[in-house]
View (cartoon, each protein chain N blue to C red):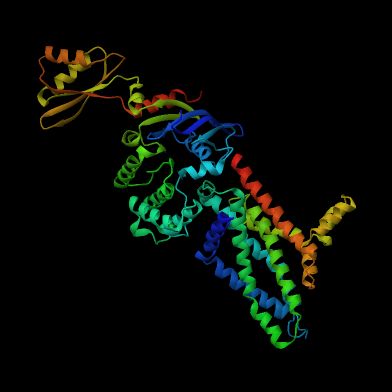
Length: 244
Length: 318
């Protein structure tokens, strides 16, 4: 646990040591603002809730989470620092968890900085703050699942661009798993129960459930277990590369 | 043996069809400085990566103070100070932040961290750069920071992959002095392809090529393996130089003869034996017979370079 925090602290520091963190935060906040007010018609729809705000989160994460996660392992491999890190007395899982935690805390910061929109909606009307809290929690959980996925893919390559592109593509598949664009690829050959499993893996469907305002245990368990599965896979990939 | 700090047992690494390290076994005791010699791509770094737990061996294992790297990697890693090849470091961190990170992961208490970081900064002379980002520093400084993080927790076993690569002669000398000072209390393994370094710091040297261990002994023992007997440097006054050369060239058992220089009226002539026999006696005899006044005859011992080339090339392609 201690080692995980030490690794996380260093990783978090690394985001802020370069302009990456600031560029990301500015773009994230600008984009989410633009989407909410223009595409989401935040004012003109005349409802005091944050649905137009949260609806765009999955789509922003699709590109921004790979941008945060791509460097986690690819950069270490490229610069060779992975040899320094993995010959320190830490277990692979501690490093995997530490790196993930740093990136996840960073997205928490990005989410927290959207507070003005929450203030705005509270000044203009009487929103259901329970729904908003649930949506924030759901959004953060979903970002965690995306991040764990991208970190896992980042461990496969030393090229950050590849990590980004593959990360975004696989994220897209998981996001859309409940829709025809993905299910169509399975329906033609897979039995119905496989299609149903694939559909149940959809990040979008699970997030939409939470953002309706009910934090159902099922969706929380879904995202947390997605994070768990990808962190486990990440550990396995890093360990496998040792014997390659 | 009980005081073996490192015990390498049949270490083998295969990458697909390529055998990078082939059944390498050796032990290192406390107080020993082992020089790992070999041409590039010989398997030196791969062996070190396996000992330090970065790569898992295909076969065999390494045991550090009773802990097996395959079974208990964390216990082994906490006992080793490792400088990886090329001294990779986090470029965006300052030297101090980086040392602090390593010290934290190594489990040093806050007070201990402060004390040890001050000590190693002084030992490897980093005072002027500790608050600068690592990526802005010269290769020499980076190498020294890599060395600093390796000795930070005062480990019993140091594994250093080319510790003096990229350093200027003064810095090389400093690092070697540092290693010599630490040597009595530690077991140290360094890899290098600079042979003078073996003479300077190593109490024992091993030659590895094509993944196989080819020679193991003190630098003197290795030198004795040189198939060429000592060459001679014959020093005569310059007016006798040409005559001496002609005489030496005519002598049986002498191969190569050359006047290598003239200093202060004295000519230095190198005479190398053509075969296995010692040429010191026949040379001094013939000089006397030809009444050439010899100022001095010095035996030039076989060089490690020769041994290195002989050992590594004779096995090439096998």
